[in-house]
Amino acid sequence: MDTHIRALQLAKSCVALGARIRTVSRITGLSMSLLRDYFYREVPSASGRWPESCDWYHLGSTIERAEASVFGAICATLLAEQLCRPGEALVAAYRMYAERCTAAPRISFERAFNLVCDLEGIWNCSSPQLALRACAICHSRYLVSLGDCSGDQSGCVFCKLLKRYWRDTRIQAHYLPLAAPADLLDWPAWPSLDESTP
Image (cartoon, rainbow, N blue to C red; front, side, top):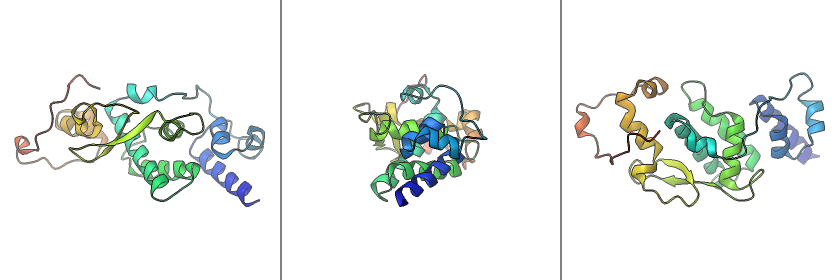
């Protein structure tokens, strides 16, 4: 009984964050017919294609990949250090990520679910497809494909954001203002980044 009640509470949280009925069923193990009776009778499940791979992450903008990495790092911490169950870690991490956004979150709950699948090899994935790597320069953790051997200079999305911040008004508008250094030339020697990289 306690397990069932816990699953229903988790389902309610997922629905409140915009999860589709199929996603909630995967996370909680509850049947779609039961979920429909409890949560989707008056509010229909969102339509549209279900994200089945992490391709959207690799094709996303720098800001989207940075936000996905923030969510991924929070969720991984909850799983590894707080020993949260995957579904509960997903919900808690998404709420914490959304609270940190100065604008509307770029990553939907559905895509956050997809990220956890690919990071942990659970629910929709039989094995992990993504991993978190710590940047040797800025020390942030960012998402990469499992087995990616690229160096920090080509991979760290946060280094890319910092390098572009002072000349990209879209990035400046999305984040809290930074105090400009007295001389940009005195900044740490950032690695040479490919300007064409999204």
